[in-house]
Image (cartoon, rainbow, N blue to C red; front, side, top):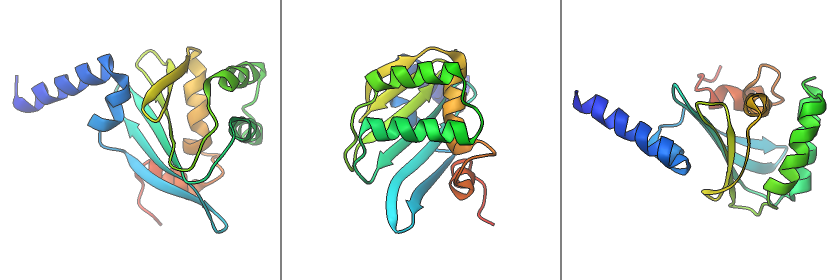
Length: 161
């Protein structure tokens, strides 16, 4: 086994057994900052390996969990993704997400089994095991219909046009 393979195996073992460290061991695919008018909303990082992916948001403003849930609902409706399943997931998020203060981080990690885990300031706060949840949630930032295509392109590591 080469040194590179051993390092990769160590990363995989660490991120599989300690998923909260995933984004500490993997280089981000891309990074972006969302600005709306003159407000800075959040800094975002997207991470991806063959078996896991994560979206980490560091908020630059305060948001209540109800504001976050309302925005998630609006984005899914705008993208025409919203179904009864999405409402069930939103109902779960009410119990998972905290209110956010400027400087807080909220991270979604999707594991190899497509289960989704939320971390608040690097501490696990809840999970949703529905396999479609994680991908539908990521579509808000990474999908072709994302509201902010420049942010999407930066997160996916595409060069600016």
